[in-house]
Amino acid sequence: MLTAAERNRIDGLRTDGLSRGAILFLISVIDRLVDGHDQQCAWKQGCDGEWESSCGECWVFDNAGPVENGVKYCHGCGKPVKPVPYVDEANADGIEADGSPMDATERPK
Picture 1: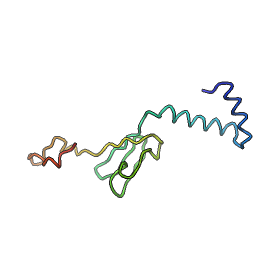
Picture 2: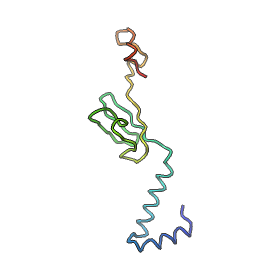
Picture 3: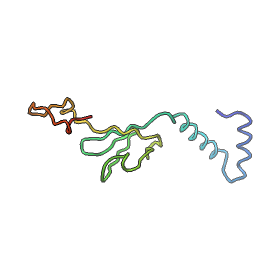
Picture 4: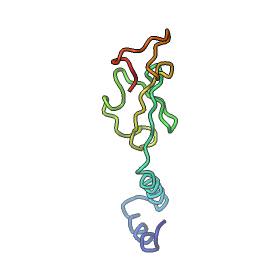
């Protein structure tokens, strides 16, 4: 948290038009961002192409996914995005529904 010297400095910043409460709020937001800077927001792709974030948001792209569309940070929580592509659980083992092996180009990575 803040030291006495930092609190005194905040009091001096109020001449810029920001209230003490506003400054403390901004500091708390920065603290939360710094504390979570090493965390990522997982964006999991659904079977219909939508992307659900671990912070509870849902995103849909017209084409491709977050990486191809230049998304680096979550619009909901501000953390770096970690894309988790959709994996068809039924075909995760490389076997088609009829029991035949999948073509190598169709197999999930």
